[in-house]
Amino acid sequence: MSLPEEQIVPWHTVSSIRAGMGNVPIIRPKTAADLTEALQHYVHLGTRLIPLGNGTNLIGSDTDYPDLVGVKTTGLDKISLLDNDLFLLESGVFLPAFICTVARTGHGGMAALSGIPTTIGGALAMNAGANGSSISDFTVEINGIDLVSGAMWQWHTGEGGWGYRRSPVPPTVCITSAVLKLSPCTAAIERKAIETELERRRRVTPKGRSCGSVFRNPDSAPAGKLLEESGCKGMECGVFSVSQQHANWIVNLSGLPGKAEDCLALATRMKKMVNDKFGIQLQLEWRVC
Ligand SMILES: Cc1cc2nc3c(=O)[nH]c(=O)nc-3n(C[C@H](O)[C@H](O)[C@H](O)COP(=O)(O)OP(=O)(O)OC[C@H]3O[C@@H](n4cnc5c(N)ncnc54)[C@H](O)[C@@H]3O)c2cc1C
Image (tube, rainbow, N blue to C red; front, side, top):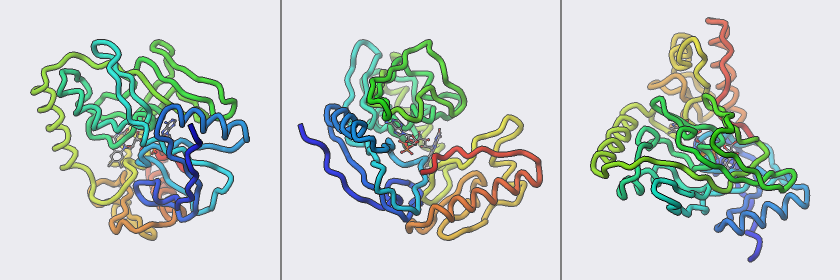
């Protein structure tokens, strides 16, 4: 076993909206054993670590972070069937691929989440959800490593801590694996439900690279409605603009790398416009590096 090699990459390469002009060292462990060994090594050195999934909710930085190491988990993609409908998944498993694969073998119930472009680790850290369902509904166990102490961390059903985009996983923990419980299903019916959801997504997802919704929905009204009525659609900053299709999405239509500062300046203007008009303080959904 050897430590995965560090690579210095621009932040925008690990953010799906391509925000962040600074550089960061990252490692890409390929096995659970490599991941554990690497995390223990860096914890021992006192290095700051940040888990990186698919980058679909992550805004990079314009600053170089030589003393922080990004842990890209997407190579950790093993799936094991434990018992009937219980699956053990490594943290880098791509959720849509998992849902499609297991549906073929008669395990389902997750079609509502099949269009979220997330890793399992990212989904559990954010409690990703759609159509009234979220990853927490299927989670039985989470395993991770504390990035400060190096100790093992676990969560089990019944321990709670979930809410709307709220997770029991502390920000200092790197999720290594999780157990999800699915339900028995008829493969053809489940496939149809997945296709219907993916087709719905194709219709409603704004064009261009993005990091999904910018703000959480407040209790009073959907953030998109508040932002649209505040006149945010079409506002621009650098390569980023507020989508004409959905006012709660910032998109990068050119796909060129852009400054995180521009992306966040646009989000700040959107937030101010809603506060000025409605007196509501929107909360950012994205994670900012
Ligand atoms: C087109 C599009 C559609 C989207 N639709 C939805 C939707 O319907 N519903 C929804 O909820 N979200 C949606 N999102 C947002 C995003 O996909 C989710 O928040 C997703 O869960 C982020 O996962 P990720 O793997 O990309 O994580 P990243 O963006 O890489 O990371 C997000 C956060 O999770 C942490 N993290 C990642 N992996 C781990 C790990 N192994 N251990 C601990 N922490 C970790 C990171 O440190 C970071 O803080 C959408 C985004 C896009 C671009």
